[in-house]
Image (cartoon, rainbow, N blue to C red):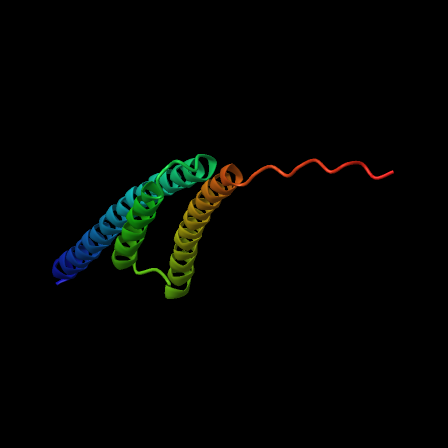
Length: 139
């Protein structure tokens, strides 16, 4: 009877240990996945920063690159949200920041285009107008 009790206790302990190892392995796989996602998010954030910097410093650069980088990052964040199910408040704030960033880039793009149009219009007006005649000095 004692031998049977020892066998049952040993078997139970073995099953519990195997389940614990399985849970630990599953957690390690999840952490590896989170690490991969973090690296991907970091890489895409850097791409977005570089595209935005290039766009702001060189007005001739297309804003499409910034939009593509923002869209790519947004897609990764959505995938991450579904995979990890983080707190909705933190996720919502991150999405709002990305949307604000994208809207800001679009606004800057429109302002740069408007500025270019105004410069062209100003140059056209300057060419078409006659220079004012010099006024005689008042004594």
